[in-house]
Image (tube, rainbow, N blue to C red; front, side, top):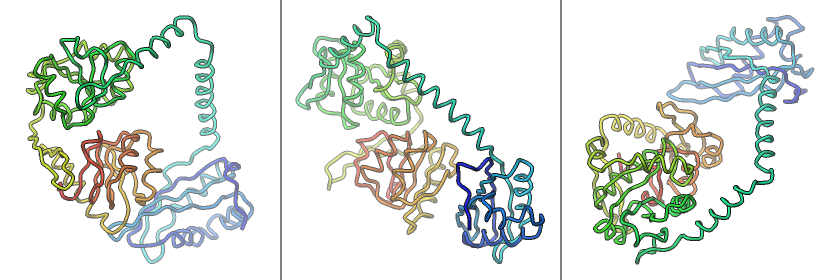
Length: 398
């Protein structure tokens, strides 16, 4: 049977299906051809249109849950606009798929040429930006680049814990605490030299000693991970002020203007404590790994969220699958665990939580960080939760 090339399609019919039972992809394909046969006459017979290359390969994606099947049908078309609309409407006449009642609805007909035009516009913007960025720098830009390079070379190791730091820790009355080495480098690049990294949430003795004789300002990322670090530090260290990066941004990536604006808006720790949600933080020790692990007793809203994640985790047991969930607790999709890392690369900050039937490991955590996911739930973990901004939960936490 001839197949239409994707590049020759002018329109794509996007259709949703809901089936009161369990069926497979071939059942859906059979219903499409069988129940539309003879409906529109010889000129719009689906089998003939596909044989002549006017209708492309019909793709069916389906998911079975709770004894029912749902999914989508995608049909590329090189027919004209009116004929494509007629083909789409004919699909909604399908009432049964296999032995089960079914509901079929055309969600939209996409004009592929519009999508291509949008791609051309966006790609042209990228090319223009690259061209602009690659022009010869003026003298001020050269001066700034040299100054930045010198400041980047100023990073040192401070104290017995050999913490990444700027050169002015001992000479300053105030010390800025950040999370990691990349944060130190960014602040050094913009001329802030009294900065030291804690390298995780377990506070080194070097930092505790600094807290006794210096004014301590904590500078964290503008996300939930930053809130957890603030809470952790206040339990074990004499913190004086708190600074957060803009919402959703990390200290290592913000600009000079954002850094100094944030520092000017620092908040006294007493005010932070009053505004902080009422969560109880306790420290637990894993005797096998001899590492601290953060344990947070969630508030009411978090309990609802955690109960939902617990149900999802139980639903996945034995499937070797993973749910990707957005901020509103909607499931964006279900993928095999072995395809999770590659899938997260293409989500563009849409994932809020990942629930997986498997053990959380280094690759999964790093993929979650790159996709800006906030929560990662697995059956168990090989990764130390203190070494990531992502909140790691396992079935033991539920």
